[in-house]
Image 1 (cartoon, helix red, strand yellow):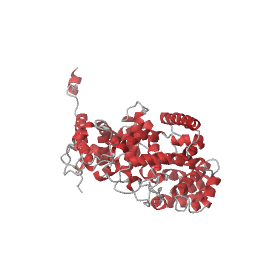
Image 2 (spheres, chains in turn brown, purple; image 1 turned 120 degrees about the vertical axis):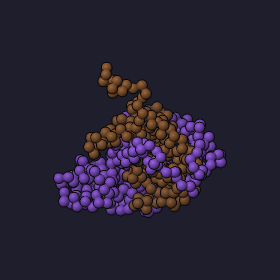
Image 3 (cartoon, one colour; image 1 turned 45 degrees about the vertical axis):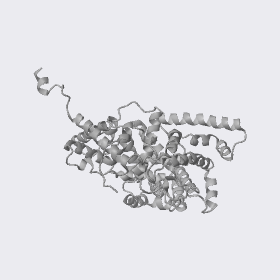
Image 4 (cartoon, helix red, strand yellow; image 1 turned 30 degrees about the horizontal axis):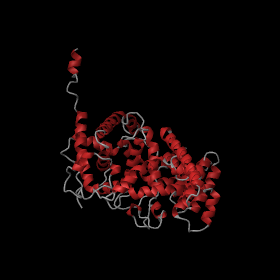
Length: 205
Length: 287
């Protein structure tokens, strides 16, 4: 990437942030944004950030990325590195209590799926995304982050571990539990409530 | 080195409906996001001193503003109260509102709390308690606590958070100082001072100039074109080469020089078909 070569950023003397050598090439915030803004927006949405907050949160993520001096390629990928920042920004945002009180699922998914295939396919896709988002709600944030990064973003466990700054064993453990919870939550969504009236019963009234 | 487990959507033992839903979720964004607008906003923030998103909309922006104001007052009070500040204090106080704006950037401040404890906890590595590379996924008793991810100590070699927070803490005022003194004239002098300019100074100068050029696009496209071409000359290998080129094309389109705009636009879109400015350039070139 051009920006990598052009942004050889020499940190301060003795600066070993990110475990990088002082003359490592860094990818600057603008280049990161170009490549990964959509990933970050979607990651935040899947963490449960409200649609109305996502623009601001994405900005915060990349401003923090800028202040960290950009991304130095290493064991973590840019995506998992940004995911760690996104988690922190989202947690901080939640602690500030500014989370909008809205259903995080529907409005976002409607926006994202509009356009493209026919209305039938759109509806099916929307329902699928809603089920996934609802099932994700069953996971706490650390497990959800690992699940989303591994199962939906296709990241490797090693990259997730390096990006989030946790041992790879913890990634496996979180993924294992997240899968159990996700499967159970998803199965519930597909099973109609036991006491729901059947069509025949409704029709006979 | 262990092999990652098979992903659920590929696992035939997983119910078909779940696999189908996961496949859909992988293929479709769960939220629409305007990357071009977001990038412009980020550039504007960086151009103004790498502070928080000053154009932040809604509650978040308001929150940032309030936080900043409060910290500005605190900084002034401390400066007055302690009389003879250290050189760093002097700089921070001297930077006035601008420094407050940046130094008090909400996400950074919010991070400092946990980051501090994070740094402290890093002294006791977590690796000893959790098996590094289990052969398969299994339960980790420590996980039962459901602790916040941000509170976990760094145990992987490149894990940045503790050191990073320091970096964040130090970077912000430096950026603010750069942002405040960053008039274009000063920047030019800085550039003339030679190649000794730090790479991030150069980057911020490029961001600022791009922001100024972009601001001219609607009201004075000729000026925007001149600035964009000057930017391309000054920063031939800059991080924002794509943006400079896009701005040239948009300026040409605004000026009615459609042939040249179309020629450059076709080359641009071939190189960056999915770039954040692709949609806008396609729209500008539509007859």
